[in-house]
Structure formats: C-alpha cells, structure tokens
Image (cartoon, rainbow, N blue to C red; front, side):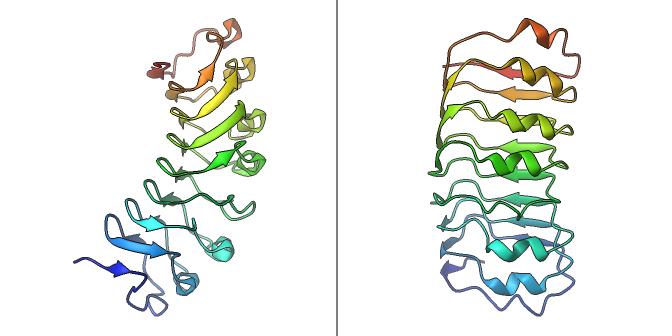
Length: 190
C-alpha cells in the first residue's frame, strides 16, 4: 500500500500502536500531530519520503518512543532540543541538515545508535557526545566536520562502530583511545 502527498489515514485512534513504519511512500510535509495520541508508540520510521520536518516538537509526550528513523527525506530544520530524551536509536542520515551538530545531542543519555551521516554538518566534533555513555554506533560520515578526532572519544567504552569517513578531519585516532576492545567497525575512508 502506498500513501501519496500529505494524506495519511487517521492515526489518532490507534492508541495501542507500537510500531509505525511509513517507509518509502510518497509522503510530503510533516507527520500528523495525531501521532501524539499513540501513547504506546515505540518505533517511528518514515525513511525515504519527502518529509520536511523531523517530528512535531511535542512528540516528547510519547513516553515509550525509542526509535526514530527518518533517513533520506528533505529534512533541514533544526532538531527540537527536548524531544528525544528516551530515544535509543536516532537516524536522520541522508538529509540536508547543516551547521554544527546540535548540543542537544548531549542530553540523550539513553542513546545507543546515532546516525547523522550524509548531511551537511560542519564544525568540530561535538564534545557533548560523551554524555551518551551507552552509545554503540556513531555514524557521522559524509559531513563536513573539521579538526581532529578528539581524545574524549575514548570515553565511549561501549562503542562498536565509529564511522567518520568523508569529513575534513585532520588527525588519526588519539593514542588515549588505547585498546578499544568493543570497537568492531572503524570507518575513516575519504
């Protein structure tokens, strides 16, 4: 079944809905605010559409939301700062976000996977990322990040995948990273 344009069936009455997968339809605009009535929602995915807004800023009212996957859309606005406090997986790869990676990322203490590849983020590596102590996957490849890979990356002890290729980073992995036994994938390709 395909949905086109900005028309979606009424979702507000689906209060027990746990997974909403709207991938690769032809959706444009924003997701309906009726999602706020889906209080059991765990997983919200709308990959490969033409959405122009991540989620309504009040989506933080969904207490169980853990996964937001909106890669490959037309997203470019800034991320709401307090929306994603319980999210464990956040994917906005392949959009048009620009500027510095938002400081609000540092408040995502439950985050395990952060995928922000192939946007137009620039500036230095975000220091606050170390507050995401549960992070296993960090994918920032294909942006315009500058400077070096900071020593504080060693504080992310559970990191299994670090993907930083396709940026403008100037140094190698800091010696303070030691022997990262959890790291299984390291991407530094141009």
